[in-house]
Length: 181
Image 1 (spheres, one colour):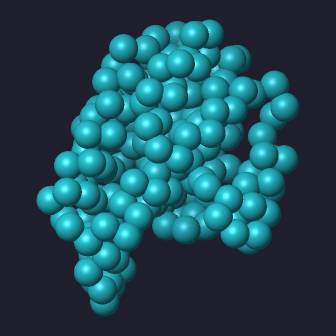
Image 2 (cartoon, rainbow, N blue to C red; image 1 turned 30 degrees about the vertical axis):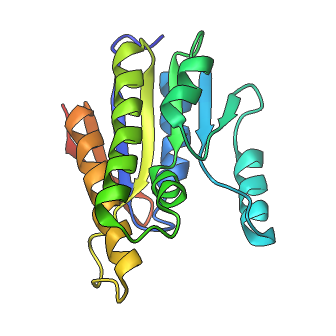
């Protein structure tokens, strides 16, 4: 187990280097890594992406696939992990939102899920490295579902950042620490 328990949030745009940096941190900070994958193989292209991600991880890392109910899934798998790498909240929120355009209902469902994740993290002795996209830097989405997604992922990122000991923003593969010693 690492000397000091950490919760590290990695934010950035698509293809900013978040996943690679997350794996580097996990390899440095943990011996017994539990990788939490939130992607769903809904089409051939996504299945290929998932397979590439699997190939990039060390074979001795355990994997839990949880496109929903991540906190609960982690509770069941945390027993001997000293580090949990979650990749990523972006897909978790998308999976939970689906095509629901009722903001209040979607917010209640997603925030309950994220609060359960925070509760799981707080009850654990493991460190966490969490990947999520920053989607608030671009244009305002032109449709209601896109705006709801952007807003709820932003709320999710803010909630996790409040509990994080360190937060990094990545651009072009370069991490910039924005919170922590």
